[in-house]
Length: 345
Image (cartoon, rainbow, N blue to C red; front, side, top):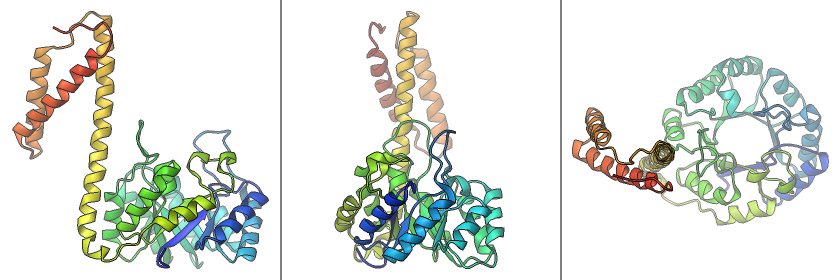
């Protein structure tokens, strides 16, 4: 792995002193740039593990002394920020939930004025480029010079391949607006499972990202948070050894940007189609229960006409839209017929 690619790795959460130090010792052998560990964990539901808090700062100090690695942790309040800086934490990061809250971001930006810090800003949980840009600008206005962005994907309702959708066109837009700000990728939160780390990481490198942030735990099966997406230091070393920093990528960057946007939109399209077919399946059950025929010609004619009008108003070819709706309707009927004892007329 080329030195220009910065690798930040470590557990989702600092859990015990032994867990932190054992993980850090193993990761130091892989040549990573910095060791990460969450101390204050903003969790979705009460009762979940919310981190060890400030006592974990002592463990990070030990990691720094013993391994020589830079250490970093997430901060969500001015109090977190001041405690981390006093403990000598080298890099702070702003989490996705915090980035989505302009009041919280401004409070942190106000607290950091006059301080020299290295800062990572993760994208907000929702796919809003303006929120991400706004968070960056608030810290820039506070005088913070050493800032990088972290693309960790975006939350989406329903089942999907990824834990958080990549939506590559959003970080690409951020790179267009702020070309001098480094961009890192967090494939752990994006993929949500170990087998997706390598392909996501390679795609990020192909898009000229400047680094990766990957969650590693000495024993992922015993992790107190996000155990499904964490890997061991040995697994990380194997993944890194197979990644390629391609030559002359810069010449194809614009093309790759367009392709990434197409990939993202195609993924969204199939997710929507999957949800549509699930609703069709529910309609099939409803028709079965109420002794209704599957095929209702009047409804089908209205759909084709209305959707063709809508597509045309959006600049799409009317015949293309009609053909597309015929294919979708055919599959919808098939899904409804798959419901047992439904009759078609």
